[in-house]
Amino acid sequence: MKFYNAICDKLRNKEYFKFSRWGDGEWYCMDGYSGENRDGNKYTQELREHLWRIFRSAPDYYFPDYYFGIQHGVFYNNDLRELVINELFCNPELNLVDGDILHKASEFGYLGQFVEALRGRNVTIIGAKYFEELPYKHIVTPEANSFTSNTVIIQNALQEYDNPVFLVASAMNSNVIIDQLPNGFTAIDIGSVFDPYLGRPRATYQRNMKFEWLW
Image (cartoon, rainbow, N blue to C red; front, top):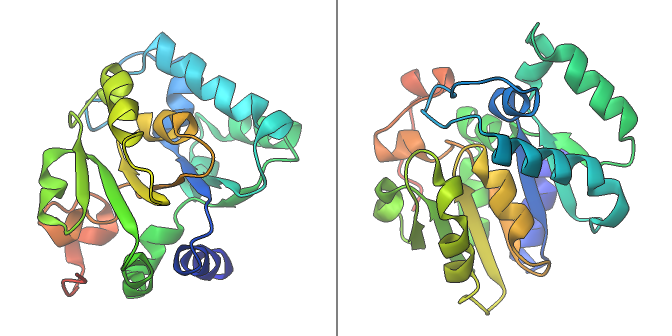
């Protein structure tokens, strides 16, 4: 939980950082798979090129507080394990962290610390329409294939100037959005961590969760 406590402290102290998550979907896309992920997001050539550029150029120019969250499931995926291990070995300077840390906090009842750390911050969610139930500003994106809307998404995000915090929930495109937001903006890939609180559990652990509304 060390990294979890660290990002909560950064939010409270208004220190900027970026946190992107790299799981099965991102790696399938990067590995050249055709089709789409379970949520209908297509593995396109353009998205693939963006993901590779972000990942492979990271040691050259990304600032220290840019965290690459690797989801543990990729190490148990027979299709992806070798690719992931080789890429991590070739990129030893990446600031690697646990990509599932927010989901673990939710599963074990600690997500309230993260939500509390967001209080008083200039928070905007970049994600599908159902996030409008949360008490944050909202840039609405398509539920699938939001990559095609990135020009408008980034233009809208740039309207926020007061030390903004962006919570990004746009599947594989979250990595691209986070990368395209300027340094000095905090951007966090939240995955589906808020979904069970909005009546839309997707991850296996979320289906039997007992939770309280945190806002």
